[in-house]
Amino acid sequence: MAEDQAKEARKRRHKRAMQRKKEHVDDQIAAATIDKGLCVVLTGNGKGKSSSAFGMLARSVGHGMRCGVVQFIKGQWQTGEMLLFQDNPLVEFHTMNTGFTWETQDRDHDIAAAVATWEKATPLLANPEVDLVILDEITYMLTYGYLDKASVLAAIEARPPGQHVVITGRNAARELVEMADTVSEIEESKHAFHQGVRVQKGIDY
Image (cartoon, rainbow, N blue to C red; front, side, top):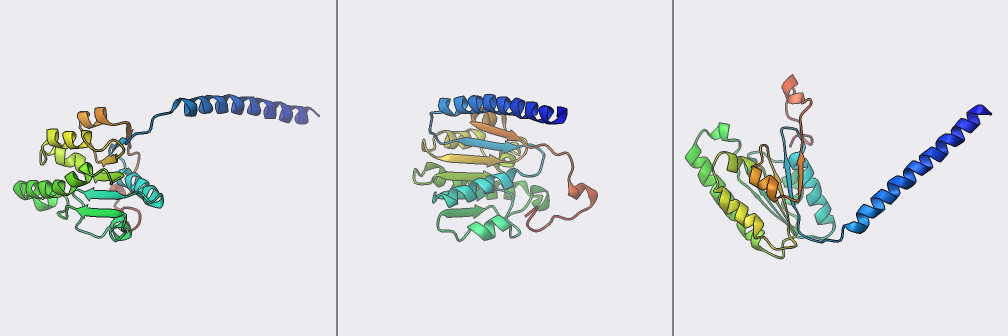
């Protein structure tokens, strides 16, 4: 008897709590009335920044949206996202194809590659028919000074009003964070690589 009463009391408390939560969420939904192209920054030292960006790409393609991807740094190996999307008629896919800067060890070469890759991004950012642009790992290009920060910020700021842009990479510049509508900083608690585990197909690339 007492146990049944306790269960009923718990159900009533749960229902009241969920009713309050629903009211709060409904109020927030009702207050969100703006439609606009978002600037999303995914930064931090943890794994998952590019994975999150390509999850948004998959969603966008699923909705029939036209998308552009420009990958800085990556490109010397075949990534799963490139294999999946490079031939999709809704996706224009570009990679810098030089690998990490510590592999080339040639600053002039890296700058030239970054500039050439950025030249693939600027038409996408100016095209009102492109709904989503992913600038994967571009933060490094600004941190290392390979690209002119002011020019990159200006192009992102001047993009068509309905276009979404997703920026990934560690140590996002303060100006990017301030410009963004949404910022997620992904922290690392533990990583298999630091335990001697090689990068794994489908998980890491």
